[in-house]
Structures are given as structure tokens and as C-alpha cells.
Length: 83
Image 1 (cartoon, rainbow, N blue to C red):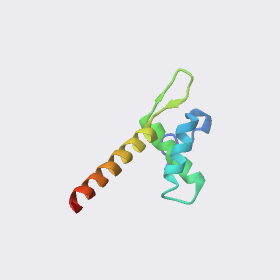
Image 2 (cartoon, rainbow, N blue to C red):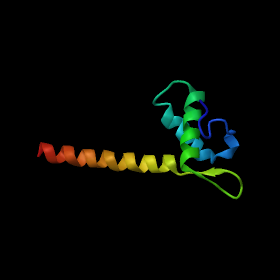
Image 3 (tube, one colour):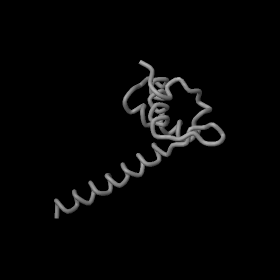
């Protein structure tokens, strides 16, 4: 099965997003190639092609922000439950 973006070269993606995405996906696998492929698929599914031909997606930036908000909320809920 071929997934959208999985066969695209690395230089089609914004480097910082591909690096961050690979790190995030390595939480699910020890295989760096597979983690990068999963990141490419997520970026391709959520991104748009720019004039320069690169795929622009803030998927992993947004995921980081969401997880950060959830961690803060969890601490807040925990603090309220112990007082």
C-alpha cells in the first residue's frame, strides 16, 4: 500500500518539520526510516505545496502546542484534586 507522501524525497519537506516529525514518530518505532516515512505521510496529508515546490505543514508544531496545553491542564487538574 502506497501512502501519500511516503515516496517523496526529503528535500520536498521543510527540514525542521521533518526532523521534528521523525523524532515524534520514533516514540512508536525504533526504525528511523519508518519514523521518517510516517512523518512524511502526516506532513503530506496536512500540508500544502508552496511556490518553491516544498510541502508546508505545521503539523508537528501544532501537535507540540497541543501536548503542551494538555500537560499544563493535567497538572492543573492534579493540583486541584490534591487540595
